[in-house]
Image 1: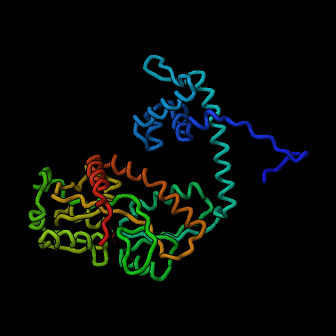
Image 2: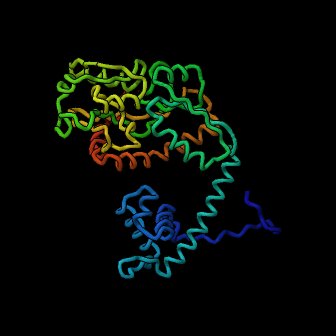
Image 3: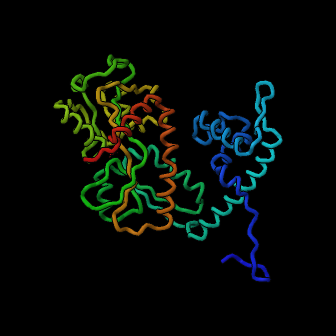
Length: 345
Ligand code: PGA
């Protein structure tokens, strides 16, 4: 019940019926970012949106307001008088909503607490970033991050050692709740001066002639590669096994052989660095990350908040991956249309 006045009657709040029906909070967010940053491009970058999306949102908002929100002055755009009024209101609305979000978090008890996250080796390339953003929102939360290979993570799930897990393939040994997360494309890597660099649609049989560097037994990446070779009737020439993605990249650059790893392993240097990507038939293999916990497990408020946060954060990760390797977009589209993005045994 709302708190009532001394006569027991609460008058209705002033209700902006027209705007409630026509404008959205997302449009206001886009508009606020453009004015604050002084640029459509920078607003698009900050919000991980494309420029056409930003322009479209502003156009819809201006239509709802019935007035232009920006005017051109020479080569620049600046807010009109209506735009400045709207900007002022946006700041107040967002401040109120941000306070509300914080109060709700407090009421839910997630201001303090502990999050135990178990992630598979290759997820270490993005899990810290998701965690970093989460901790900015909930600075009072302590985080324990355990990084292990697939077999070890499966053991940890079985022993109920952590709140949540990120892995490249949902385990089938026991019942779990699994939420599909960002894409995990596996790509063929070679040293930049390798003769196959620049070739198109190289047959897997040709790759099978080259020495291959594989992850250690127990790795999900390793299992996926060996399955691909087996399905194609090829025998991999395994020259070396290494327990770390970074060590494998160094071995590739050192000319010890080719390898197949997740594109995430190039997240710092990008695909134009010393490790080159080969265009091989059937690649990239579009795998998927999963956020996982055992079925029936009661998630803590902190773990539930992280799960929701990570799922909301996913589009930003996709955009970052596409920015790093624009070719990825066409594979993501195909994988989504054919439903093949999910790689389960
Ligand atoms: P891994 O797992 O890091 O153990 O290879 C990654 C995956 O399953 O894709």
